[in-house]
Image (cartoon, rainbow, N blue to C red; front, side, top):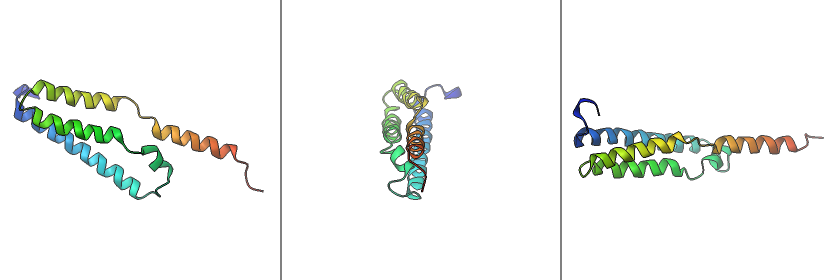
Length: 109
């Protein structure tokens, strides 16, 4: 927010950029899943992508909120950042399960 402090317009613009980055992430995930079979390991690991959609909802709420309270909007931006700082172990867990189940199966005749 730099020299303008927490003025509503720059804060809303910043939130808009964050929201567009979230939309780009969502498009990327959907494109990656479109290249995989529906029952693939990646598709089962990503699941419903609640974290991604929650981020979009929070950004969409925060942008107009800058007109009411810039501090609350910035708090929502920070909340999304904190959500993504928590490691998401879904893919690692699924890969570990797949490796474990394939090593437990006997090799061919």
